[in-house]
Structure formats: C-alpha cells, structure tokens
Length: 417
Length: 217
Image: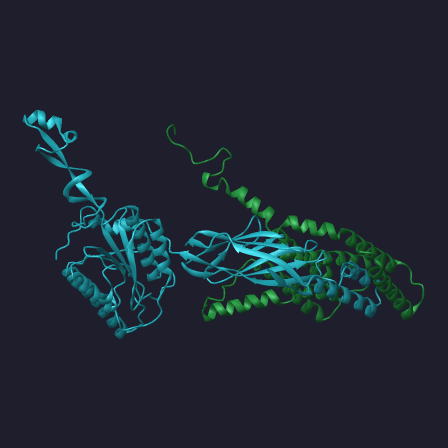
C-alpha cells in the first residue's frame, strides 16, 4: 500500500530555531558576542536542513490474529519500504477497548524501526476496530518529520469462557449414542448391577465371583450412554449501568463456558440470543460449532420489536427433550413469560441468574420504597419460576460456574411434564 | 527452626522481591525515563544557572524565574505523559474525564522547551557580561533540547545514542564556535564606547552564520 507523507518542521527544529534566533537577537541587542556563541550549535544543527524528501512510502500492515478471545494478546505488524535513509517509528492510536502494550523496552503503542510489531490487548469482546497507526519518518538531523496515517483491520474478539467442568444432564435422554450415563441398561462402561444369565448374554459379561457365590451364572449389566441436546439461551436485552460488570458480558462468558463444556462431551448444542427478538443457531457438535456459536454471540440484534419470537422458532432450534440453559438477569417480563411457556411445553429449563447488583436508585424515601418494591418484584419472579419447576441459580460471573450448578450436576436433573 | 523454611533467598532478599530489582534495573536501562529525567534536570539547571546570582533585573527577574520553572515542570509533565494513551474514538468519557483529556492535550501541545530556552537566555541577559557563564549556559541549553527531543521521540537509549553519534561532528563544531565567541568576548575591545561593542557582537553573529552556511553537512 502506498501512503502519502506530510512533511513538517519537527518540534526539535522549532526549539533549535528558538534558541538560535533568541541567541542572535540578544547578542545584537545587548552587544555581547557570547550569546551568538550560545546560538552557534543550534544554528549549525539547523544547517542540516535539506528540501528534497519522498512524498510517498510503501507500507505493509496487518494483524497477527483476526480472531482472539477476550484478554488475549495480538499485535499489529507494519513494514516500511522505500525510505531507508530515514529513521522510522510507528505510533498506535488505539480504538476503544484496545490497550497497547510495550514492545521490547519501548513505551506502549510506540515502536521504532522499519519493521515493527506493536502488541496490544483487547479488553472486551466484540467486533473491534484496532484503530490507526501513524508512521513517522525523521531525517538524520531530526529537523523534518514526515507523517502518514494508515487504518488497521478489525478483529473479532470472542467472550472469554468462564470455568465449567461439570454438566447438568437430564434424566431422559434421546436415543443417541453419547457420553452421559442413562438410566436404561445398555452397552456403556458405567456399571449398573448384576442379574441372572439368560441365553444370548455375552460370555465376557459373566461376573465370576457372583456366580461362585450364588451357584448360578450371573452377568454384569451396564448403563447405556446417550448424548443430549442442549439449547443455550442468552438474554442480552438488559445490560445495567455498572460499566465494570456488564450483565451481558457475564451472560455471554457463562454461555461460552457451557457451550464448550457440552461440546466437549459430544452433545449437540444450540444457541439462541434474545434481544427483544430471538436469533437462533441450530444444534450441532464439534469444535467448529463452538466458533459458530462464538460468532453468533458477536452478532447483536439492535432492532426493537414487540415479538418475543419464541413461538415461531422451528423444531430445529428447540429440539424436543432438550435441556434449555438460560443466562439472564430476568429483567424482561416478556422473556419470563416465554420461559414459563417453554416449561409448560415440557422442556427442561434451568435459569442461571446473572443479575449482580441493583439499578441505582435516588435518595429519599420514595426512592427507597421504589427499590424495595423492585426487590420484591424480583423475588416474586424467581419464586414463581421455581414453583413452575424451573430452577433458578445465581452466578456472579467471578467464580466457577460449577459451584452454581453443583445442585444439578451431582445427579440427573428430573423434568416432569 | 529445623523444619521451618525461611522465606529469604540467598541474597538476603524476600522471595517475592527476588526478581524485582533486576526488573527495575532492566526497565531503567531500557526505558526513556532516564532521558526524561535528564531533560528535567538539565532544564532546572539551565534556569538556576542563568538566574544565579540574583540581583539585577528588578521585578521582572523573579517573575521570569517562576515562569521558566513552570516551563521546566510543564516540559517534564509533557515527557511523563507521553506514554499515556487517550481513549479511542469509540469511547464516551464523562465531563471530568473529558476535562482531564483536554488538559492532557494542552500539556502535550504547549511549547515548554521554547519557554525554558527563552526564559534562561533572558535571565542571563539581565546579568552583566560574563562570557564563560553564558557559554556554559549555551552548552546546557543545547543538551537540554537534545535530551527533550530524544526522550519524546527515541524508542530507547540505544536509538538515542545512534542519533547523537550521527550529530556529534556538527555539535563539536558548534561547541568550538561557542568557545571562540566566549573567548572573543574576553579580549580587550578594539574600539571604544558603543560602536566597539556593536562591532564585536556583529562580527560574532556573522562568524556563526557564515560557519552554519559554509559547513559541509
């Protein structure tokens, strides 16, 4: 890429000019030749000024990674050709949520040389513009500075997944081979019990110690291993007013952790984002599907619509018998109604409440009263959901998600129709 | 004490601080903080050198000293905040943060070094003729300007050394001229009265200009 250069007098040259002119003027006004001497070094340095300079430079720039996870480091690489006789420096002017890091003993966002690498950190997920890079060329005497601005490509920063090692598993699983032990007997590796031998049983499953004790042939039985369908629903409609602890961030980090945990167990994972209307991704499995989910997280729907949208979701988006894991602050009454409706349709729903804190209330008695009413409303919502058989667990976004889900990961989650 | 492990390293330093000294030393050696500190010290030295001894200048001298000292502090602030990165175009800072950013921008743009230079020269001019004193001030001022420039533009001390090495012959020639000018000021005046002084000053200015124009760089 060829970029035009703007050449100007450098600040150093202006300072030298100030010293030279002031020294000479004072020497003449006060009739003291030593001031002319004081101006001499500055004047000699200024004598190095030469007019001919390149008007364009060849610049190649790029990023070391186009997709990263929140908190990961990436770097801008830039190389300059066709201006070897000038010293070059690259200054990174970062966009919002981009934090420049120091490169090899230099200050953050600054690197000198014709081939430079400027590391940076992305603080928050999203499709992020990295900013602009300013190329500064200086001549040998540092009297003139040529500057050029280049735009840098954007990158996709996925939410950093929280820690989740355990999984919530439903008691009824679809007839599909997987890794979760089902109640039904089958060919899995989890021991279920011992029963009497019937013709047709495999000889290798005979339990010889039990056979010896009882005097009749006994065989081991095992549990079947099934996979389950999980649909992760993230409510991004409400984000609170705490700039440091965004509710949406917590919800997406939890959703990313859950998606990773279930995909690692070879389950099929679907994804629905709710922001006044639902956008969905059909269940799938594998590492590639995780990145599909991560990309869906970055696609935020900013349109406002009256339609909660769940009634129109096709069967692919909400497979029958799926576990629906919801990350929500439960602030949107229409979503709460939708969750009740899903429960009544027989889905196993588990809500992870990501609301941490309260909306800021003003001072005064009326404000305190309003806050109390708000708290009671929130408690009532959670109580009514629990009464319907929808468990609600709280997660603060800091600790492991396993701790919040512990009551449901110890044994299979029972869902009644 | 037999089973208890003291949390000290062999060097007598706590284990948590074992790498701290090395890191700090490395940072001090690599960063431009040394250059910024040198620039600040040289600026302060220039102002103090040109202001001493106090006496002539009337009420203007103390005001000028204060203004020059403020310029030294401003210049140091400019260098200290060079590494601060303002929020990008996507950020929406509050009113106080915006005021702070405006102040930072103003601090970075103001010509502090020019203020120090003018203030020091003016303070020196208030005193009666003292050629060697002025010559030392000239050396200190050029060193201050170079240190300021290198602190704000050089990536590290290595680059600063390269820049200085490239400019060394010209700086040496300039310092030679400075010594000649100071020595000529010490010679007994050729003429008498005002005309003699003018002639000497004009000759020095002409010599410096001629050298600047004739020097093959």
